[in-house]
Amino acid sequence: MLIRIDETGPEVYNVSVLEKSGFKTFVTGRLGGVSKKPFDSLNTSATVGDNLSDVAENMRRVKNSAGILKLWAPTQVHGDKIFVIDTISGLPETAEADAVVVTTPGIAGAIKTADCAPILLADPVKNIVAAIHAGKRSTELHIASKTVAIMTGLGSQPSDIISVIGPCIRKCCYEVDLAMAQDFHTFCGGDGGRMLDIAGACEVQLKEAGLLPQNLHDSSICTSCDNSMFFSYRRDGGVTGRFMSGIEARSA
Image (tube, rainbow, N blue to C red; front, top):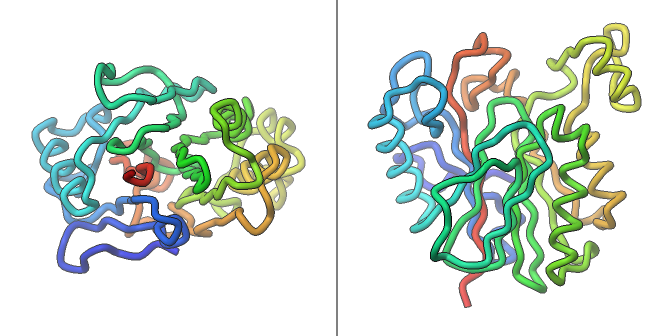
């Protein structure tokens, strides 16, 4: 599902199932950048303690590899705010949100993660796209289904929307405390019922929002297990980089 764009360039992937529908997509790995340890090397976040010039160079490489000219990412706060982009001019540099919906071609909406679930949504009929940062708190607040509701309010039919859950920490590696396990009891198992399936919870929310089973896709990649490929906040001890997932609506 994730296809590397250039084996000789930075570790940037296309999401094949969305690319086939005409959308420009990208998911970054952790290799091919200039950031030093512990952010080595393709860190995309300027808020984790990395050198800002290194992050800027990493982002230049990412956009060049993905063919993205303009990119917008929110300041993520582990909530359920959703930012809508319906123009490519007059945008704030950033805003607090954990999802971004884009109705206008020419700008990619993106989010940054390192264990939380990145979700990309695309409606090929209305040409509306979204990028979601679904951590445990945002998932508890049903950010995935709320993003679908925003897209529906803009004209999408849930049955037309295609979703992809990207690399995130999986239930094999995601132990949560007892209170969180009780909140997510349906999606916890193993080790006393405290291993959280965050991707499974998001998928159920998307189904309940009206997405069709055949339009639900999951990379099945665990950031903790595949730590050499993707940043993992838990596996890396809490000090690490962030990888980015983004999507751009089809050009007219």
